[in-house]
Structures are given as C-alpha cells and as structure tokens.
Image (cartoon, rainbow, N blue to C red; front, side, top):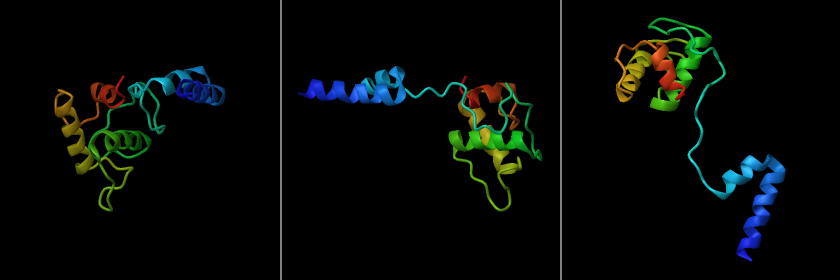
Length: 116
C-alpha cells in the first residue's frame, strides 16, 4: 500500500505540475539556483554597481545580497541605494567567494551572486 500511495502522489504531482516535478517529488534534490535573479535587472551581467549608485540595477544587487548575506534596507540606506551597508555586504560576499574584496558589484561578483 505504501508503494501504491507513493505512486498515486507522484501521479498527482505529475498531472498538476508536469513530469519533471514528479521526478523531483520522488527524489529530493539540491535547488537549482543557476541564473538566480530578482527581476529588477536581467542583463547578463548588469553593469557594475558602486557606492552611491541608485536605480533598478542597485535593487537587483541588493536583492541578491539580501539572499546571500542577509543585507537589510534601513531608513539611512533604502533598498534602491548602494550605500556603505551594501558595499560592506558586497565585500563580505566577495571574501566568501574568494573574489577581490573591492565592494564593487562587478562582472565576477554578478556571476557569483547569480550562482551561474
């Protein structure tokens, strides 16, 4: 009965989400985060982000830095500003990925942030 129940669950998942979802439901796997993006700037790679920048590319960088480092927006440094907190989070992230700790979100840093 356990086998029948598992097969029934896999069939239900397959019907709802397609056969790829059924295969992943049967065997837990690492999440695929290749090409991770927050949807603010989908260029590959986006332009560099440096201290004082604002805009959609900064939103993208900060969103990914939040995912990887826990960076949070504050009243002093809102989410659309690349300020000292974001620069520090970038240096920390770069250090964990064995990149030069420049604090600039350059092409190599974008690649690591997007884990591609």
